[in-house]
Image (cartoon, rainbow, N blue to C red; front, top):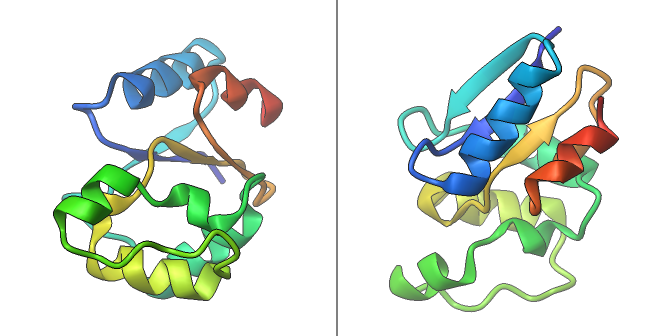
Amino acid sequence: MPYRLFHNPRCSKSRAALALLQAAAVDVEVVRYLDTPPSRDELTTVLAALDVPPAMAVRRKEARELGLAPIAEDSDAATVAELLARHPQALERPIIVAPSGAAVLGRPPEKVSVLL
């Protein structure tokens, strides 16, 4: 099973995380989540595995621009996943999921090393 990178190629942090994974010579599945949005169920699983509260996976600026209500800091993974399934552009990036199922929010991108 490969590492999964929820990736936006326009994002420098996402590109840096991809470069770190490639430099480590691991198998990487790149998920361009704006082109192929993940399902609510997939997001729930990923958000629950993150090393930060699920609400940290929401880009505040994009959420505001979309006219979305602020997400509570203590929101659970299912609540955040529902929002992100409907509005994938609000997903913070990059998110990296290891073959073990552990996940990190790659900000800064060097957090990828925790999973390697």
